[in-house]
Image 1 (tube, rainbow, N blue to C red):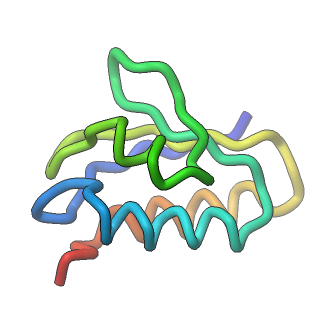
Image 2: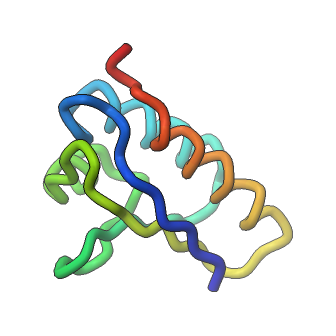
Length: 89
């Protein structure tokens, strides 16, 4: 399964606004993506509540995973790039 690991750049972590932007991008991809942080079970990245409940703070590393598909690498690259930016700015 394709994976990407990225540090959360948003100053306040994946709180409501950045989580909603991220989830919107995941849903637009049409692929089932999960997000996890060390020591926690992966959650469905298509759910804003699940993403926020993960509690990923600024600088923490998360792993994005997707089932193998033709677009998986491109989608994960874009999502990782998104999380590597300060979405609070």
